[in-house]
Length: 138
Image: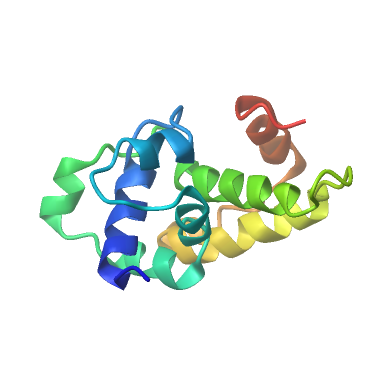
C-alpha cells in the first residue's frame, strides 16, 4: 500500500503537468515505484481529488501551471476514468455512455472546481464532444 500523502502529491503533480502526457508516461517518469493501474485509480478517487483541491498553498500553486481552459482540471481525471471503465469491459465491446461521462464530469467538477466555477460547469453536449475530440475518444 502507498501512503495517502504520496497519492495526493502524485495526482496533484499529474494534474498540473502537460495534458498530452498519458498516465503510463507520467508513472514511468516518477522516482517512486508505483503501478500504473494503482495510479489510475488514485487519479479518479474523490477523497484524493478533494485533498488535491484543498492543498493549494502558494508554494505549490507557483510550481504548477494554471489550466489554460476554465474546466481543464476536470479533463485528465475524466479521461482516466473513461479509460479505466472501458478497460473493465475486457474487450467485450462495451464503452461508457455519454450520460455516464456527463455524470462523472459533474461529480469531478463538484470536487475539483472552486465553488464559484462549479455552478458554471454543466457538462453540456458541446463540452463533452470537444472533450472527446481533444482526447481522441471515439
